[in-house]
Length: 414
Image (cartoon, rainbow, N blue to C red; front, side, top):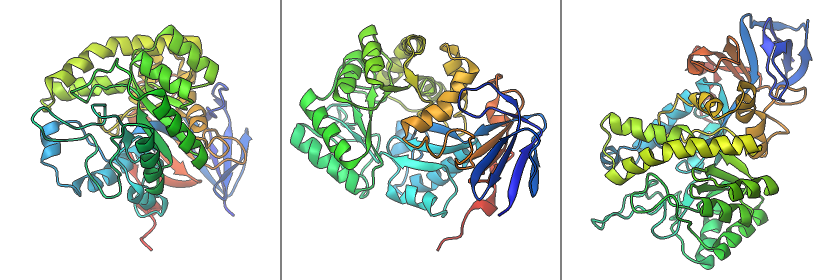
């Protein structure tokens, strides 16, 4: 097999070690050696660049392309699938070779990527979000009509549930539909006009059933959780990750540290809502007001969690904001107290650990899959990252260069 060596650059291997000059050798889709002066059959000149492991975004919505209510009402059902193709390509071109889709993408989208029918990152999918009546996923509006964040779709079960029995049945339906991870809203949210992000949703018995069924199926649970009480309920139930974590208090942080619960901050999300509103997007006034109210407290909560040592994985909520700007999340995490090295770790090995794939991905170590990102410049400079991705390799093969997907990397349909 051809041995390809990435030479002349420095390596930030994802393990937490500082960047240092080194070469990386890959063969048969795997990293086989990291060190100085390596040789091989082919070489990739990385002078002036840094080698990184394939990046992760642990919270995306590839079937969403903004939150303009009027636009969504006028968008044909099938249009979102074509947008997903575009969104997946933009994400892969950033060096993000693995994502966790937090609702929207169905098994067909994930299978198309897995089969090589379309270009995109590896995907774990939640399919939809479990919500109580009147919760973050309930699309009911005061006019009497419904427009949920994730609309009706034959591959996406209806996930408004009340009571333990409905929870159990719907979880099993999501698993049957192909969910790799389960998502639940344990608090209200920003984008749902009829609830309060600070209020807890679902009772302990309902969450216990959810976690019981998830554990039986060998999958993890992620919780949209913004208010402190909803966060604590999720942590006590054994849910693996808290998404957003806007109103974290000291008790919630202590619980997360005790239980080893992950935080996926999505700091870009409220900013994206406000940017959309400023650009003229049609959004309920309540949504805009909530986004404006939470941004500062969100930043402060995440900063407190980082300082306390809560485990953090990078996630953006892209789909609420534009796909292709995902890497701006790293500078937002740095603004909340992370060093650049910690921000990269959250985007590589930490995220791989959250998704349960750290044995294969997340760092440039011998034996792991050869997902390699060539980043121009110094990795401690977190500015302009999207424009600095020189090349992206997945399993040792070039899949993107200069911000665009390489078409040869797409396998023809079978």
